[in-house]
Image (cartoon, rainbow, N blue to C red; front, side):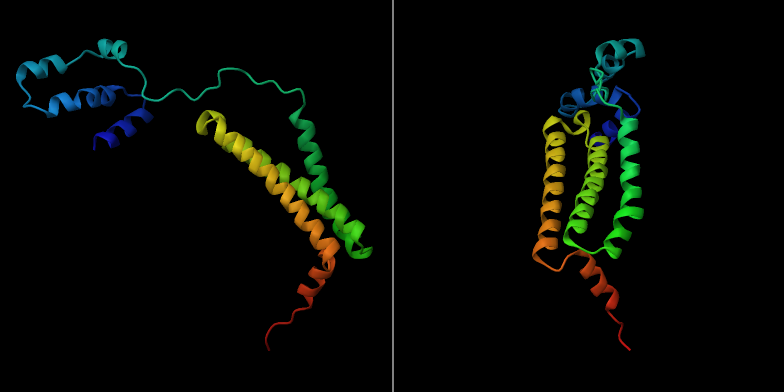
Length: 176
């Protein structure tokens, strides 16, 4: 119950439960006497001076300045999405070949990588999860992208390829 009170109050920036938790062991070990009750009563001004926040503030200590513009990257991502939809997919069906499929695989993996990387950077922040987990998540994103590209290229050059696979899926007839 004390933990629940502390967690609820830290969301409201109240410091009273942290003071209660500090004194909980002392209070619970013997009966509460009127003199002890008077010593536990503290004015709000004293309480603010004595207590410290239970959680560290979630702010960055330094402003991170990037040398590149995020607007440019966003425009490139949108152009890549349009190139996949209106360029690579129609060309792959009209001009099937391993080279065209490899171009599609590279562009699709780049598009997927940028999406996952932005999700990881936005939601797995070092201030919340710590530097190790944030770096590990970014490394996992790069490993996932490299593995995806390697798997697609292996599928294109050592198997039937993407277009032939999609054609086989379309040729499947349902049970009659």
